[in-house]
Image (tube, one colour):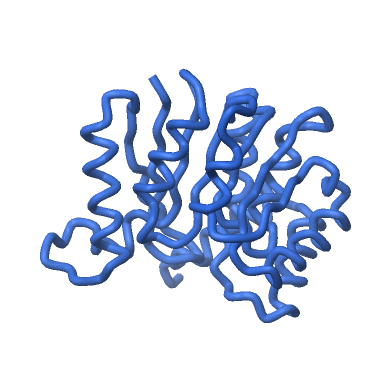
Amino acid sequence: MTTPDWADVDRYLVDHLVRDAASAATLGANAAADLPPIDVSVAQGKFLHLLARSSGARNVLEIGTLGGFSTLWLARAVGEQGRVVTLEYDPRHARVARENLDRAGVGARVDIRIGAALDSLPELEGAEPFDLVFIDADKVNNSNYVRWALRLTRSGSVIVVDNVVRNGALADATSQDPSVQASRDLIQLLADEPRLDATVLQTVGAKGWDGFAFAVVN
């Protein structure tokens, strides 16, 4: 018997633990619209859903919508009385996301804001603090997004940043890749910021080798 690879294990886990027609339809619609295939994996989407549920999140901020796949998982987690504010730069991506979320029956819970996230974030100041922030956008601005997340959350809120391990390049101090350099800057910020208690969980699977940064606001 050959040794299963990461994608095989992902398929096995999804087949047993994530039987979900709406998320499959969303991925299909994203592919049909020729969106880049950079959504979180199915298992990761379910993990975000369980993280939001277990933390009791009712007010969620997402930076980087794409076609709304992770948004769908988060919107289900917050319940009918909750809300997800999601920021998307590309109007076409936002349009696909809106169609996906409405079709899945969670559209009323989701506020999609179009434009550069660093322009949209100041508009959220002064509102109810967010319980959970999920960051999955342009990697070079991850540290800026975390700084904004600190301004928009409360003690006990959770901040999650995707794609920080960069296929292991995170540990390469000589890398000239802007996304790797930005990830290293982010890790240093998480280490130095007294208002955050953080770690990184490496992941392997259908999306390759990467990882999430997790932080709790003190």
